[in-house]
Image 1: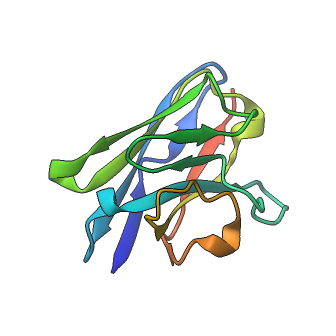
Image 2: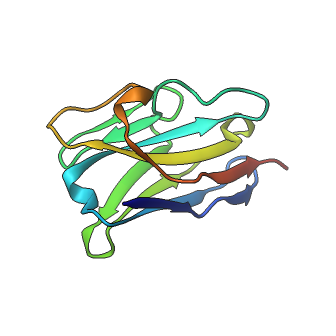
Length: 124
């Protein structure tokens, strides 16, 4: 089982990027998917900025209203659309999977499978 995160890059403040989290070896829609980030010089945040199962999505205050997720089940991929980017969004972004038990998972230790991370840099 594997998760592959992609789509990072450089964006200007106010710009947009779309990240992708592609699953292999398991059906992504059966799992809760979380997005985490690690800012430069800091440890990875202990809670996801986003946690999503099929019917519900949690957004941290820091990204609510700017970031949205969508799923493409045919591609077994979850997308993270990031708009109105700010310099403080600069980080390595990780997607991770937790068991799909009908609950949203808001702790790092609830996630079992992690992608390798993709760098997002917001700078003018």
